Length: 201
Length: 201
DNA sequence: AAAGATCTACCTACTTAATGGTAGACAACA
DNA sequence: TGTTGTCTACCATTAAGTAGGTAGATCTTT
Image (cartoon, rainbow over all chains, first blue to last red; front, side, top):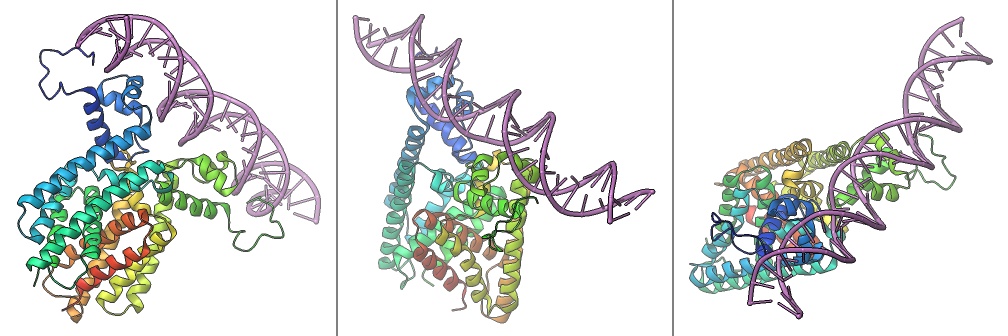
């Protein structure tokens, strides 16, 4: 890139334009929806001209796909950590739920929920990508819950796959609603109810 | 209104333009989001000119507010029925959840979720209206759960207000995700897990 | 009951601003 | 020298909203 690096630019600010675009675009989409932000908004947020964005992301769909990929990768890393050093089943689900809590605190929804809302209007490619995002989380949760059942920390009898869907639904819904109410405490309450219900009595 | 009533027009088709606009607009918003539909789309769906929409709803915000009002009224009526002739606490929550199931089956999300996603970009008025929508449901659920606890059908010990938030979160999230997967069955599964967890063991 | 006035619901034609996207020039690098 | 990243300047399209008008219904007055 050609931007002059002014002396007061920190290491953080020096990160390349593409990354900066992804960061700001994610904030925009999570804050106002995919159809609710424009290249003009993003250009202003990053301090670059609108046309320059097209150099990095030719079309808005390309940008959306890159956004989902980066978001999914970040989650995947977090899930790996939780699985590696997380405690028992319910503890892992709680750690997973805390990932969503950050959104409530920052006033940002889930990127994939923002895209999912657009439904039929969403380009096929993005719909596939977000479906894969949810499918990944579903698979991770199912494994975590199954292991938890085997270890006795998660209540037996329930189908882990069904339980996994229920967990994501509750967290996605709580993020959606508690962001509106700007109420991280209420989110914590719902997370507590959710995790408690998972525990072996 | 001035539209000629052709002989083959059924009673249904004869309903006035304003109602027709509200119906089609609701489908559009629930299908693709508030920012994702235009007056041009709506005009085409209803078979009217774009300018004529402004006669009924001067601005898009007016239309959005009318949409939320009609949606909330429909829900309020349904909630009253469930409360009147619904069975025990968990049975009422299940009946409430079935209201969401319709959306999954038709491929339509929750109107208020579609609006909530837009977050900061959403006109203040609409944000207030959808917050009121959720607050109403929260109050209704809290009362239903409290009564259920008193009657012994809902498990004791849990705070009805927290439980109410948890119920809406789960249903909103399940609608969001299972619409994407076009899976009413999975929604039913989540609803079953939710209601089962509410029951007195 | 006739006459005029007003209202309702729609129309065509338009404006202004914003949208996503393109073409081509230019400077800094490697 | 060619590649990369950015720019200015543009394009076609679409957005919400407005201006002004018309035909028919309804209300008001005599």
